[in-house]
Image (tube, rainbow, N blue to C red):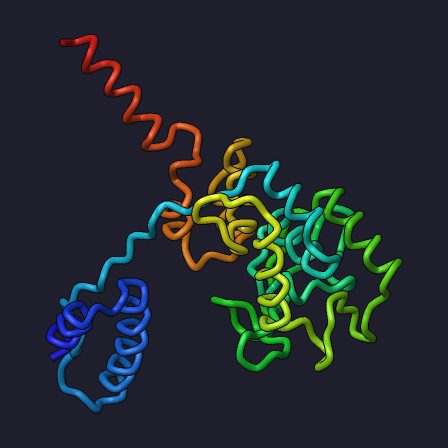
Amino acid sequence: MVERFLDEMESDGVGRGNQVNIFRVLKTILRDAYAKGGMADDPVKGVQEPEYVREKVAIPSLAYVKRALLVADEDLALEIVMMAGCGLRNGEARAVNINYVVAQDVYRVREQIHSNTLKPAKLKHRKVGEFREVPLPRSVRETIERYEAKHGTTKDGYLLRGLGGYFTEGMERRRVKRLFVNLPAEEGVGMYGFRHYFASNALGNGIPITDVAEWMGHKSIEETYRTYRHLMPGSITKAARILDAGLWEAA
């Protein structure tokens, strides 16, 4: 029955990423029922999980990032800086907080502004109260300090805020729409591209992928590898070129 359900999702055109997420939720529910004695046999034993292979991500150039910071308003520019400089997700960047600067070069990511509740929420793939610490480049820290000096913070230390108290996805979306109208077209690049830029900058400068995966808050290093392996020194792309040269020489 589970395999038939997966086949039907495939035939109905459900995206592979959504298939993976749906199957994992279903597996959790069924395994819980099995563990509690509600089912005699493990209903997902031997069922192959749908495989999601991410398409190659679009990464903006440094010139594009700089241009975006010039075009964006101050609120969106701060969000872009947190994404490109520290690798934060959109919601995490919207929750940028002066109290989370825990050292001159360390930022503690504790929460996100949730897209649905529009309020602070736990991090993705983390339990309530869990956090991760990321490198805080000097230029990013100085941007935070300038913003605070000009605009101040809320009583809880949040820098970005709106009518409801927090900088929400809707507020971000409206600003992003204006941003990309005023930017030269760069194929495939969207707001999330600024987070991809962080990974590109880190891996391109030899920072180990294990560190990058931890800083970006990925559930597993496999996610980081599948998304960014083409950026790594000694990547599969480089290996293909080397092997090709050897084949031609042999011929």
